[in-house]
Length: 347
Image (cartoon, rainbow, N blue to C red):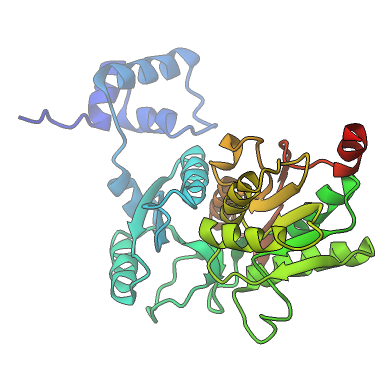
């Protein structure tokens, strides 16, 4: 049988104080004018009895439940963007809030049910998150609770947190430039000519814009561009095999994500070439497998944990509307090197 819940009155009785005095101490009131001994007795009594505050009752008095709803499509059940929820939970806990996680699979009916479940529990706010950055269309449900979009945008809720893809794109190109590679760079995963009339997402557009801005600033052009609609290893493998059959192989490959780079690595190895001695590779996302490649893959990281933390901070801080872009750090490993000194040493 479950034991009776310890009440505030039990703590006060054990400490030899009134219920109001014990309440002020446990709630951290700075103006209690109670002695340090009284504070010590109350906290000791609470610890001995295993007292837990009645959050529901407190919520009725303060109109706050100290609960946040995290509503996502597939974030909680896939590893790809799990950092979003990790960061959000950490920020919520540090602010004394509980995170209620609701997964919808991206299905409209389940989204409606999830939002309804959150509102029924009178959450203090909602974070709407997506596994891959995109515009999120939400059910037309009226509610007054504040909301923040995470890795997503929505016209109805202007507060949103996204990765800074433009400067992330610049960082990837500049990593090659810093190694002395300015020419013979192949881009795999996107082709301006083949995808001119197509639109993937606003974040992909930003990534490409940053890449092209850096190339223009360096007065450089790609030696080839390969359009790959699904950014998976087999696409990167096929594109790289085709590139390596050309008369002049590139000095570097810039892959639009790590999974494409995984395929590129395999194709390079099968051609009896080596990364980075013969070809440098740089990509995006910082997939957890990128560190386990040999050599380790240099990549521009999606800052998912930082984004999750920032979304909750914005939600609880009641900051004004607007878009927040979180920097994408360059994770430098061993996949970039100027091939010219290596070639000269061999000769």
